[in-house]
Image (cartoon, rainbow, N blue to C red):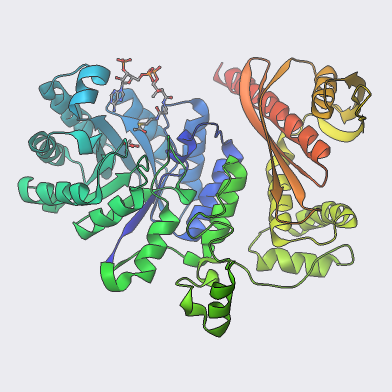
Length: 514
Ligand SMILES: CC(=O)SCCNC(=O)CCNC(=O)[C@H](O)C(C)(C)COP(=O)(O)OP(=O)(O)OC[C@H]1O[C@@H](n2cnc3c(N)ncnc32)[C@H](O)[C@@H]1OP(=O)(O)O
Ligand SMILES: CC(C)C(=O)C(=O)O
């Protein structure tokens, strides 16, 4: 049985999903969960991309102990230096550097000849290898590259010090058979291929990312790259939970396994969905709400008689709870804390007491608190507490089909001063957001607004996601509440608070640098 290494790029390629923007604490929270999931490598970001990316890659490298942390770098010396700066204190510093090899990318994007591409790749891999013990090199758009050229450049970067060679299907163009043949070709035509590990990185533009990754495994790849929930640039990357469960359930066929702790899959998927705002489709394999639901009579009859008639995966294999303990307004601190720890939600005692107050407040208004509700409360409280400049005290909205929607908003400011304003709008949300803007010191333009329910039922909690431009900075925010208007206010303030936090941090860094 071969063990396949799992290279998770949720924090790098996953964050390249349009509309996703994770902050420092959210990235750290995700990295910690990926560590619990037991991925082998976390690609934490692209250190040269921004100060924020640098800081979060550095923090993740310093914090995570049980998996390797890496960062992406172009074939550019300053990118490699930035990666070294961010990763050098990690347990096992490794870099992921890349250069496109296909004719389309050479001609139009890089404007380099084949010889220049080889020279740049070799020079930068040598430089990377002078710093990092592990150097992964990717031939971007490998699957649209002439095979003899691909083999030539790979041999040269191995000679230059690369220890892992990744063959990305950057635009999701290849088919499983072709992709497998590329791996076979390289194994037969690159003399030094046995000195390195081979990795696959597949995109899902034609819906073949998992099939292609499995084909790579059958043809010699020992590392698979992907993201949780399959998020990523354009149509996304190979969904790691699908790959790991496919290898587990069909190991009679693939004879390969991963080290993933499959029980953590559901929790990881739900955390990433919440923090990125990328909703998991109900019919998504392994983690979709319907993945283990049987709807039709013949299926239900079969499952009642024998589960395996229609179930090839048991829900508890991937951490779906079947617990029936009901938490509500009559529950006390013990049951609350006990449930948090059963759910693996780690909180200090003092924090648990504060969360209990939030829980009671919600439970008063809501029939039943689900595990999803608890996870959402803990997450929101944990992530927003350091970044509150404006805090919501209360809102009052008046709406009638024949009257002008009016909002009254009361906030507390950064010096605990009370700010109160009233305003109108064409609808309740506009009235609310116009009024919130009046309370602030700056201008905020709403770019996107989305609402989602946490769990099922009429009394489900509302999770609102907004994207807005506040004082020239574009950012996103989340808000959770029983009521949609309250959740909308919280999301708006969360986004504004993030901008203020980022600006204050940048100012403090500038003062420190002087
Ligand atoms: C396939 C992938 O997913 S690759 C990863 C993609 N991720 C990202 O791009 C996110 C982070 N990116 C960024 O923040 C910015 O693009 C930066 C900081 C990296 C670069 O920003 P800028 O210097 O403003 O350049 P810009 O992004 O406009 O253009 C990219 C430049 O890098 C070059 N380039 C692209 N890939 C590579 C590479 N692997 N090695 C060397 N140069 C490269 C391009 O040819 C272009 O060069 P040019 O300016 O000489 O034409
Ligand atoms: C940087 C590489 C691995 C990449 O993300 C791609 O080619 O899709």
